[in-house]
Every structure is written in C-alpha cells, then in structure tokens.
Length: 327
Image (cartoon, rainbow, N blue to C red; front, top):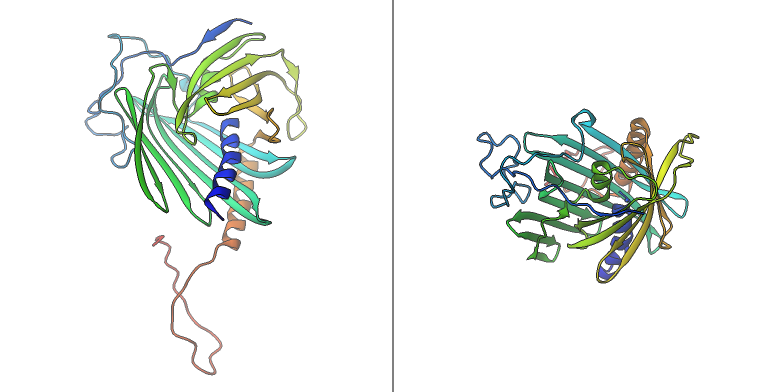
C-alpha cells in the first residue's frame, strides 16, 4: 500500500475517531490548581517513560480553585464499547476505559477497523493512551496507528504554552510543537465536553479540541435538537437528545449527529458529511465478542517468519519454538 493510500484510509479512520462524536456558550476546561510534576513523590499517577508523563511546567491557575471533574466519581471506572459501521456494514469497534488517580485521569481507547485496500481486507489498529487533569486539560498522550504495512505514532507532552509532538513512522522520527490555548480540551474531545456539560434541547455550545490525527487544535460547534425516540441495536428505543456536532479547521469540516442520554454519554453517532460512517454503544459482552472476532481474523492474515534446518529425508514432523516476546 502506498503512502498516499495509507493517508486516504487514515482519513476515514479519523472520522471514526471523531465519532468517538439556542443559547450559545463557549465551553472550556475549568482553570484550576494543576499539580506540578513532583506532586506525587511515589509517582503513582505519573507514568515514568515516553511522552505519557505529566507536564513539569503548567499554569497553576487561581489559588484553591475548585476542581470540577468532567466525569463524576460514581461513574468511574468508566468502560464503554462501540461498534463501527461503514455503509451499513460493520467494519470495527472501539473500546474506551477511564480511571482516576489523585490528580490525573488515565484514558485508554483501543480501536480496530477493517477496510478494503486494493480489494484486500486491511486492518487499522489505533491505540490511544492519554493522561488528563480532572477538568479535561491535557497532560500527555500517545496514539499509534498500525497496519500490516506500517505504522504512525504521535506522542505529545504539554509544557507550559506549548504541546511538544514526536511523530514516528517507518521512515523515521520528526519533532514539532504547537501553541496551546488554555481553553482547549484534551483528546477525549466531544465525549468529555458532553459529560461535563449535558446539553438541553435547543442549547448550543462551542469548544476547542485537540485532534491527534490532525495534529492541531480544531473548533467544535454543538447544537442540541429535541428529544426523540431513537432505535438502538438490540431493539431498544430510548428517548435520547440528538446533538449535531461540526468540527472545523482551516482545511476541512466534519459533521456528525450524536444521541446522548441524561448523563451526556453518547449512545449512537452517524456522519453527516457523506462518509456513511456510524457507531453504536454495545453491551460489554457484545464488544468483547466482536473484539475476539477481529483478533482471530488478524491472526489468520498475519504471517509469522521462522527459521530452521530443512527436514531430513523421511521425516514427517518438526518442532518449532514460538517467541511471544514480540522481538
């Protein structure tokens, strides 16, 4: 697969990632006391290597400011599975887990999509790990997108007013940075905004989000419709609130419609820009079964190199040792 094809298919994967997505209000993470890099002597909340570390130079905010978490403690640990569809056909899933330490949320999102490339099924795996303050402010993240043909890994650490980025690919390593604005949410994007500020019918919000795949800060406009009966997989028809979300940057615009419950959790999403993508929240047992199916398919299309002496004449068996260390 050429680099151009890889980028085009990443664009579809990016739409899936955003699906993970009138009074006008600008919604921002609350400015609060932020811990320094030495806040925990034992480092229990701060990973010790790579870019996934808490920033050592952050804005402290007003003294003794009240922290307003975007997710309540009784919702943690938060665990959600979503099934992904393209043109009405299931093409993948993503699994989100959120847990809380003393100062930081740990967010993990594992996604797997299978798309046809030159007539051949190709799996795109996207693993995202992020550390964010309780108010939604980013500390650090790492996102790795891989296929059988190659990988792209983007990691970032927020230091003061700059987000330092490291981009790794098969071709090498690049480094860059961008200016960070105080009112920008972390990589959990639309879901954290909606859970922090559950919308009411007719309400409109604006927010700024960081999109790892675009490597830039984008603007989001959220407009709530009227509550309606909505069909979900499994035959349930709850009354949910539709939220139209428009993601805008200087080059592209993506629109989705997301149906949320009273807690602001997204249960259903569809694209409104012609890409024909959609996602639905699924019970844990369904999500785990689908993940196992894709894991089995990956094992069937993955080749494992081995080395050894040819079988001697007359032999009908051989022993091979499988190294599971990943080397």
